[in-house]
Image 1 (cartoon, rainbow over the protein chains, first blue to last red):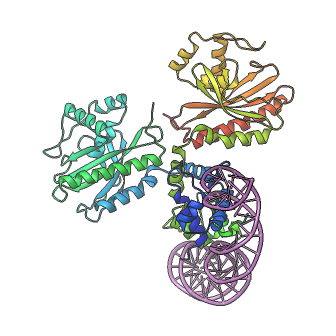
Image 2: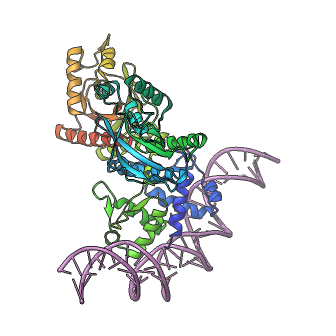
Image 3: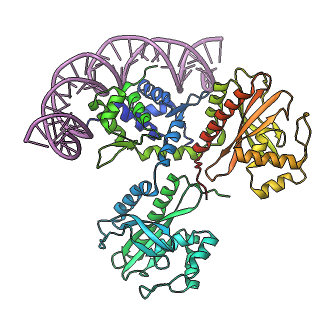
Length: 255
Length: 255
DNA sequence: GTATTTGTTTTATATTATAAAACACTGTTT
DNA sequence: AAACAGTGTTTTATAATATAAAACAAATAC
């Protein structure tokens, strides 16, 4: 596959701007790219022509242009959570070797809408489309925990606490306590509450309005992953979930 | 200024993808660009390498990549409304020849935070930083109209309806009626209510949470712009305001 | 079963990107 | 005040590189 050098370099230059505020001098770009500044200049001017780069009129410094924002928003419109989340599920699975899942709320249950299997994962059955109880799964707890009060009240009304394992939470008081914990921590867990030998962690995914629209989870065999490693995995999980939320337009500040 | 042909072409290719055309065949790209498909192929592969283009594994069709979304969201974080709105104010002024303004709410008044003068505009005094009453300006009406009920009640409590011209609305009943109208239409007007001879239109700007955070306006001399032309200007105004909202992450659907 | 799609790879040519050097300008240091 | 060290920009020769023709593989259509 033939790579176009000039285009490749131009896109590398864009990557140098790692924050929205970063402004770069042409000389700094040329040294960091190991290119002569006249070369960089031509590339920048072409990028600028299309709006991918802007120039600060006074200082002459260069920064990212609005075209990226426009195209990004355009892209966001026609996409669903699954498309956006996919690569993050994949990278979390690659990092941990465990299976990851994407789950949304439907009625009083969760529904698996995507999954990526890890190569170390022993459990291999397709979960996509399958339903999962809220009270006995990490994803379910997350989805329930971040509903509004009214919606949660409705959910809990006549809720059926089916027991799956010895550890399954089977009363409202304990479930509500679990949800409070999930909200506080920004994550929920399932310690062999749904299936014997299986431990999961889940984190919320927020959309641009600040609502939790999905949960992302990581499943492990309790026997295969020890406490400290599981804790590390959860850190990664939360990081990936946050990345997805950010892509969906979520920003922490909400009034 | 030397333009890099390959880069320029690559960016043109990205522009081929818009709301209606999300996926394109390589042959279609080559015909529309009037380039040989091998050339297009090289460009696409380089773009793909950086994540600006994705390929549908099955169909082989190409589409925009997630990198645009990432960069776009990155850009959005560190920016304020003014930066984002600037070019839209400018283009509206260019199209109409009239002056445009960007106004935010501060207490019980509006504050001009940006403006672009039109070349046909006769009124030439800087309004940036200046304050404007809510009841006698188009922007003020918009800002008031799209507040929540509580906030609006607070605003109206002990509000001082200063009279500026013969047309100035000076009682709460009439003002509330005006606000209802503004909400219904998605725009508000000022028919010489603030200054004799000056007529303005204003439209709301929404942020990603669905809240109205600013108003954009267009000012005309009643004597210079007739009814039908003014109506056309308002259409453009609403379009530009909507574009800014979209850049801020606003999408119509809100529950 | 042939023909026409699709996307991809290869290869020769000359167009085009490249980088050196000169330029214009600003601000700083002597 | 004058030389200097910074900017970003323009010009120019060279040769490296993008280009497009043609051949390829593989799927779909007729």
